[in-house]
Length: 214
Image (tube, rainbow, N blue to C red; front, side, top):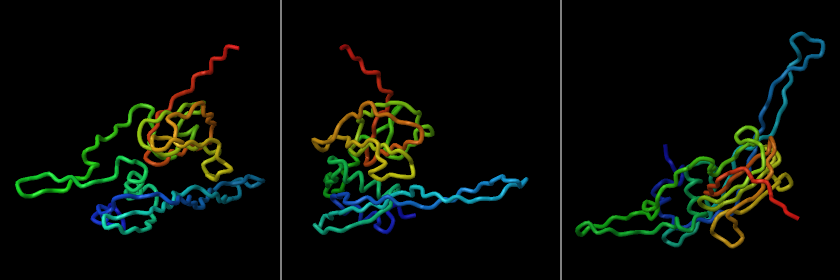
């Protein structure tokens, strides 16, 4: 199986930078079956259709070593999408060629091979989608930056990720002045969906009660 889809690992190695230019949320219809008991012993079957999230299509503008630029569209959750997001979101991941002399020969080493791998610790969340009351407990939480850059978004339901259903959103990281290192006192109720994007890792903890002395 080709790890990089139609792009190919050799072509990916020629990319020097990537910029995320568009993210389109995709949905699919899911059918739920049940029965309505209205006089019938066995009940009458009923089908209910519901639109649920089905990943996202990501569009990247990539630049090759030759200076050529190209628009790539990939699906979220794939190895290629993760690598391009890492290249786009982390300023330190921009790869470079390092020549190591071995006699008269030399070999190319990716800058990423020299970076230490992050190990997730207790109560740390990587990018992904989490449902409160199912994946995470309900309550009021603080989210503290651990690694990478991205955003923390809280939505009223898992089926609707539009702006009108967004309860909380914050850019988190260390790339720009408008990004923050902490999201404080975020109220999360049962059924709310938390979306952590980019290559962000945050630590979740219960918010302490504010101390007010008036």
